Image 1 (tube, rainbow, N blue to C red):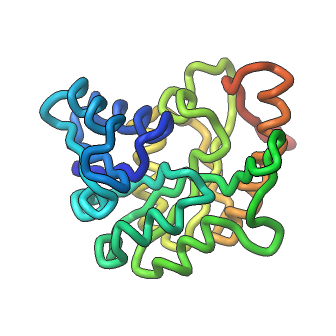
Image 2 (spheres, rainbow, N blue to C red):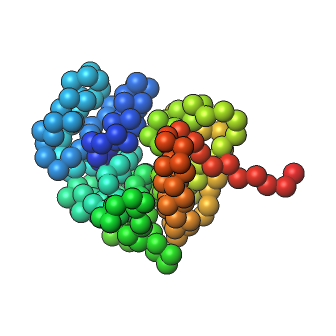
Amino acid sequence: MKIGILGTGMVGQTIATKLVELGHEVKMGSRIAKNEQAVEWTSRMGQNASHGTFADAAEFGEVLFNCTHGMNSLDALQAAGKLNFAGKVLIDVSNPLDFSKGFPPTLSVCNDDSLGEQIQRTFPEAKVVKTLNTVSAQVMINPSLLPGDHDLFMSGNNADAKGVVRMILEEWFGWKVVIDLGDITTARGAEQLLPLWARLAAIWKTGQFNFHVVRPA
């Protein structure tokens, strides 16, 4: 499959690397075509890896991952071009974390809205699915790093798109428990886990952990 990755940071590179290792063609997009991180990543990963602008990656991919910083996601996706999202699954991994006042970060959007919803409203032609935003980059693509049962969440309006995303999460990345929270408005709950996640990461000095929902038998 052809995959477009929007973002060149740790999350984007971790997901992109996993997908290339699985045999997929991956194009990493940035604001500029010759982003240094993207160029270096491409040189390491071989013939199935390429890079370009946000628009190049969005046009290339059959499935797209938004791995940009949440505070900049809407601008980055606008730069990718609305037409390049038409009919495509857009997996939104980002979080609206605002570090302008230091640590711990606050959420720039919350309570009665979410970044996932803002992206879906701004790009109605895309099939936005919010997921993977509640775990660290390495756990995203290798949940077996953590022992026992632990959970991932997803939100989105399109059932078929969520089916594609579930396949990616379970078959490609190895997730055993993916909880469908409902439509894209439920991304509010997943995004609002991040202040708690940040506090735990600070206490434990690691991002290698996750949440598990325990229900009655």
